[in-house]
Length: 637
Image (cartoon, rainbow, N blue to C red; front, side, top):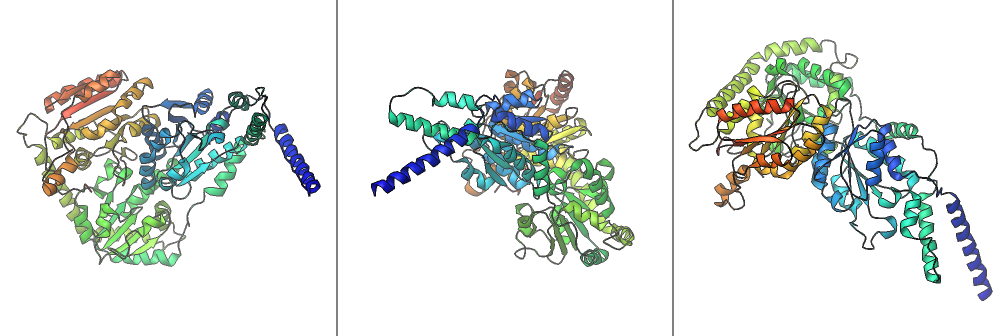
């Protein structure tokens, strides 16, 4: 028996030693290439122009290597800002850049959870690369150690881990493509610190080569070295980044079904041909396509529909000033209740449509959505209709593709426009009536020395916004007022959080927007409460020479919550703030600004702002606004 065990033991030892020798020989201990170099090369291969970060030891090699390759490293003051900025790049860039954020392990990653969930619900895809504790020390009490993959699984489209240097390029490339494939969404990649540094640095820090007399220490050191060899095996192999990219693009970037049967389109146009009161709702999802090629085409399709259109999210201003006659903002609920034909393009029946209750149950409802869950959300509970799981842009393209539908469709649409002229005039009359009502409300004088918030928003709309202005919305009540009074002058000029109702996007969104369009004016419309989340990013704007204008509607409270809380619970606990001097915060970081209490001061303030922008300096307008009941009845829960 002893003889048998001895033979087995010697055999196992021989096998283990053989594996050890193989692993040892597969590692180039002299190479200076780091895992950070590999990550940077992948980003370069995808044409990434910048990444956003808050530095940390776990991710330093990625930042250093990226800078060496000419990728801008934009360091911010809070990790959430890095994630929001990456999100904004993915949403706004005309050349379909994928936003990249790189944050350190533990709290660096957990600080991004809100931004990830915000992007997930907004169907915006970016990549968050997070550092992690050393593989050898997982669960052993190392600095900033936490189970990140499991924690982020519920707020990301995908989470990917990596434990070997030779897999880094494959994993990062896969994440970039996955973030945009199908329904876009955020993807998290975890890269442990030890595979980001060179193997020599890891060996040095683990001290496995130091002399030791204890047999236990010798065995432990050999085990550690074996693990290091496993993680760094084939670490100097030649990597074909383009081949890896092409493989993933081919494998994952598959569109949803690209066409329906001709009979289905015929059915849709039969309903449309008899519709007297059609309405189209367009959500941000229609922009989930290669914008450089499809944006103009999308706008042209929407014009050809010749129907009243309500836009939401980033699609506001999509058709430009010359086609505002088709674009409506007010009384949407009334229009939907009266409509007999409703086309939902990338719009889910969630709280914004009262879960479908806003739709006329007698209307013919057609929903087109690339997200299967959003497509049928609350269907047959509060609404019912035809549903098509495909990209809205593909759907519109096929409507006007005569190989799928009858050539008489343009004539049908034209006749439909003539027949529905009374309906269009009715909606335009409502729109004009509401605009006139808002205009009258803007003229109301305030009892205290404060600015009427509607008047402030109208002034900004009429004097500061042009076709090279991008509006970033971050707040509650004041932002809601702005949505009714400010109008972007063209496509991709409006950026709000989306359906998650997130506060704190302002600094990050503005950062991403300014990098995408450096020749554009970027204006953050802030509620005073929301500004507190990211106003310190004025330091980032200054350091990276990215001038931004922030306009804070300061009513010294969380108005959207306070309104219902006082009405229902008869208490204003935790709702009140002060008329704080927010402009001084910007001053700490080289941004000029003024606190104003009337429109006359605002005019002077705008003149100063124009001078600052010419000098490429950021600015803050701290506008003390009066309390308002303009948005009574708005959603706060």
